[in-house]
Image 1 (cartoon, rainbow, N blue to C red):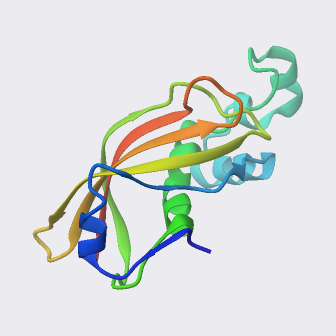
Image 2 (cartoon, rainbow, N blue to C red):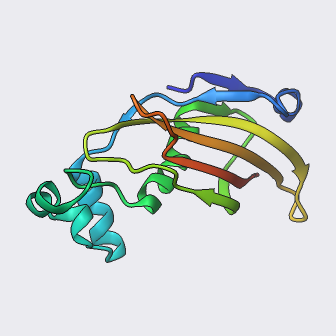
Amino acid sequence: MPQITLDSSEQLKDLIGKEVVVSDWLTVTQQHINLFAEATGDRQWIHVDVARAERESPFNSTIAHGFLTLSLLGRMLDESLKLTTIRMGVNYGLNKVRFPDVVPVGARVRARFVLQAMETASDNGMQLTWHVVMERDGAEKPCLVAEWLTRFY
């Protein structure tokens, strides 16, 4: 269930420069990691070989793919924010992405979404620029920092 529901683009425009939502915590499981590895073909041992990762990895466990972490943004925003006047949303791109820290299996993560800009797109959609910081529960550094562009129609 969304934490915030907005009924107009004007309500959203009033939030430019502010933190709009913070997602709920999500636990990243080995099943998430394995399914992502299967879907992308990235089966590097640090992600999928639990025994080897416990033995040889400096993290003492498997870790989530950086792109798995990135792919959670859509889910986290969708579960946190409902725009009643929007039919659909799409990813438009990313201006900058960094993975300052890893996400070990079993870690809980959440994302903070700050609306940086909102403008009319050339295809009559609304383009939103989000500054997103994904936190890992108990970690000093974020596991993801991104400038994410979405389009809403």
